[in-house]
Length: 497
Image (cartoon, rainbow, N blue to C red; front, side, top):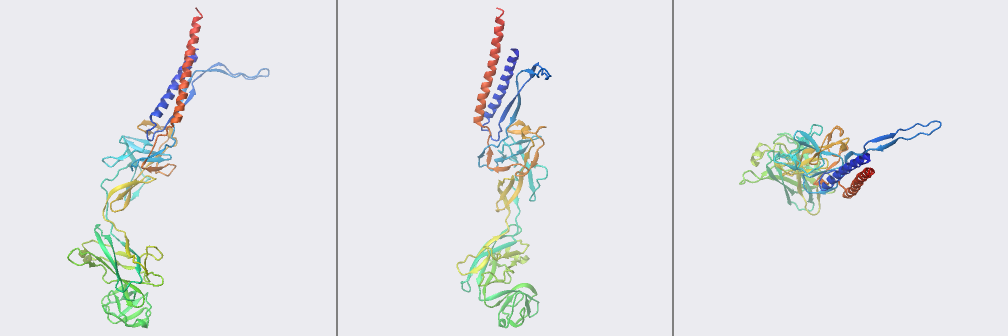
């Protein structure tokens, strides 16, 4: 009878432990990132009353006779099943979809958590509600080395992006083929020098009399012009020709062959690979580019010394000299001084590629000519950020550019259930959890990161309430064992009376 009483006591203790676990789970039903626990019981010891007997030729074997001495808690296991996601709208709230833990440096130790309620402190560090600093990798010179050791994730407060000089401008749209000679179409675009100074450049396309454009080469003092793209004929004699190093009013005096002509005036400068134009049949647009003078009292500065031209094929609507595109805008010291700028590299002017929807074309109809894009930027200051599914933190700057700033690390374990709860929704490594496998989200079996959401508690109230009933009935049954054993002892004592 004493054995039954002690067995009942062990049952009470075990049932109380189960109640403690259930109560803690229910208390954390609204704790973000919380993982519920389950209790497993084991029998304690068994007293051997009679040993087992081996069978013989005349008798069969006998089984051992044992009396159990109670119950104990075998294990309390953490359930790491995925919790539901709750949308918060805060860009620093992160949830993990799948396996993995955030790595946090708190004091002199590294802890791990599923609770992604983070924020930036006064130093720009990404921290937990208790001040632990989230770990990851910072981007250096545009490179995020995720193979290196992790460090504190910090938002570089006040960070700026240096300006980028414009190297390319793209023109596109439709130039109306039925426009009359002299029709001028303009479009402006802002470009940037090496200091990030904004310079509005206006491109003007003027419908010209029938001409064609070719690439030519002349020598100072020579009356000979050679072109690799021309097919001169006797019909070209007497037509006006223009170009770098060619005096105004120069005409073609004679045609030597399909690629060489004699000019009516000697060239005044040596120029190779430059654009020249002769009057002929076709659809020609003269191109100019201007920018405001640094002195507002002076007229706009012409950025092309010799105005180039584009000739369009009336059958295709595309420039016949598209391979030449337009000559780059070259800024020498005098031009920079006039503009008050510091351009270094030539600024290429493209007209798009054949077959592309943004290519510059000429068809009858409405005008849609426009300067479409340029690749320069002014100086930019950090305005906002976003966090992608792989934990990459990307900064968005005031000049419209974006740049990686760092990447949040995730840790995975061979045995997550072996982690030890450290309070505040944190876990620490134990000998049974295995070492943390640090890496990026969405790799190595780790889950993805969802910004603007939190993982809620995975406590199942229906399951917990059911466990409550089981614990209560178990406690009642064990209490009954004790009271019954006590009554039996009382009856035994009463025998003496």
